[in-house]
Image (cartoon, rainbow, N blue to C red; front, side):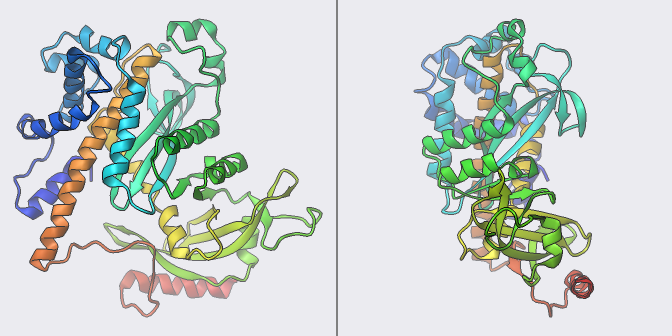
Length: 441
């Protein structure tokens, strides 16, 4: 369900007119609220003309245009396309300050004690060679090596609320080393080659510096396998739960020396003594998703020595048999449920990408210079925040409605232990698989 469909679903339950897609009449209803929201950025954008262009751009991203790049947005608003393109490329406004304001609003209005920062990359297929950062590289959207732009992103998750709070373009090294190409795309001289790991850590550092409070960081295998990434997160006084490949090696007890051979975690998973526990980690349309989980303290093998003690979690889906491994820097007394909540909340970033691309035109940029691309991404985060905030307010009204009416919302907590005596058919199947798994071990 996309973000507009979710709004429509909640509205139907509350007896509100079905908004469906953001048609002109629905956008007109939101216009006073949107104007009020954008006024919070007035000190970032000094001139009246640029503020008007911001309103035009955001309204276009929230509207029902098929393409949400500068030209179709401008034409739909009866604005000369060049003026909106110049708003991105040459107008004098503080885009970095806009990004900081987005973070400030998120922290002020949506923060929770156990907020999660989710790191992930996404790709945008492009034609030609003129878009800044475009290169033949792996593209998650198409699932193959493709001509695309890749961004590294930081998502913010607070209970049911999520949004994007930082994003940077990944420039392959051959792009950075191509002086002629850099000049043509107006890439700043100070922008040096950085790996995706380095970009991810810079996003976290910038967000923490700007006052965005995070308790946890989650990431997939690409980042989780990197000891530099994990150490960088800890240096920011944040806890992580990151997915790792089964090839990661280490020990369950602190080794006296590295002469004692480290084992792959998939081999440790078979042999170590922690008992299986069954958890519901996600609710899907087909019912609860149940995973068997083992957790143990772990010392990773890093740089010819053992690393800092942390947690190793092995999780197996009781129906599909899929196995995932996670490392965590959480304190030794952290409940397994807490770490699982972080580990399996990464779906939020996938939803952010889905809605960002499908609803507000995150990937619809058609630009040839770095500043225009950077500003498009920042404005997209602003538009998404407005939309996510509106959805969140409706969810609060929905919750109030269910409380006042005495009805149940159908939502349930994630990361809870499953009662093995439950009569639920799916949980019964899970128990049978668990018994077979126990016998196999």
